[in-house]
Image 1 (cartoon, rainbow, N blue to C red):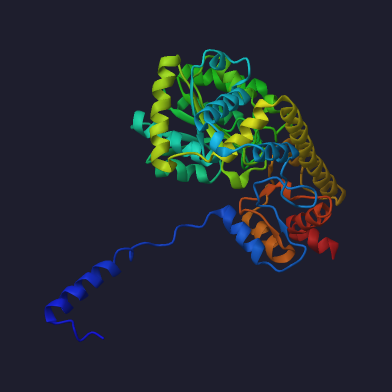
Image 2: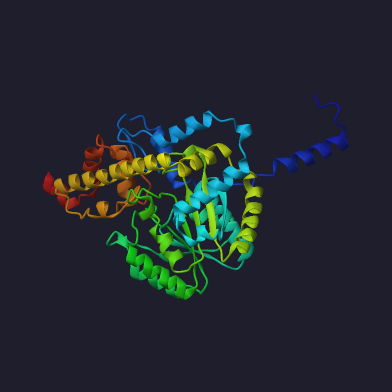
Length: 428
């Protein structure tokens, strides 16, 4: 087989083989994403009554994914049209404008004066990544302040863009609520003109949001320090069931004269997780600046994914621009938020009925998709091994995974793993 290889060729062959074999020898496995690890462990468990509380998308009361009727209606309308007849530029332009109106408000001066730059993105993650790259290009010596805690992927996104990451205090583990004084102190002590990432509603992972008055104080402090607010809004509608109420933080900042940026995702509130559709927008001082900023955002995005998927963009545009579909979407969102609120109430009530000595009030005071339970990593492991209940090690519960059929089992399991040794002995 190798007789045709002489000494010189053999040396060259071995040298080339050595080089090509060593290209990736230094690569080591990346750390596993905690949320994906939960899903993998859940899928590998054969137990029929297992519970997945790590999922970040909405589920109905049977634990099944939901595609809202408004999305089905939009899909049916799309099937009646020919894609070759669509003007993709017009669809994208309308999608961005309607998305900005949804976040900033129909009557926002930013919309009226068209003083915003916006582009479609591959869901909220892509919107964050594009902004991080934009930040690196035009503020190369800046850093980003993230709330502690925040969605785990936020660190990865800004790290990939080579933006230094710092944390600001947000959650109070003792009260299981907002550490407002610490947040304000960190905003005050950060260097003037710092970038801050804020969750405008349904904070992930804690479910803890500032009140309207607190948002106004945060906005004032940011104005004093000339900080730049970047809003990552992945769960609009899930905190209160009201799209406008959930966007009040963004609108407060705009009223106070801030320039802001916003990443929007329609993966959760429209049930479009597999469609990767989102929007990135930046408010500007005037139309001229908006044109310049938009051109830079387009250039960054073009190097990442060239063009956004037209099908999902059209789906969202149809819903946002059709009054009947929009009314239906608002109604469906309210029902989804209500189901989650009901599960919060039921879980807390059952835990209290079990005479748990712990305070579970935070289950109902926190809002949105997630509840920061206060469970320790050891207790989370115990829930997984002893009860086949899966969640991230920080104790974040996806309330979408709680149903009327499993809430009692979940509450009893939590009660079992949180009992003290003294209580266990007393029960025996």
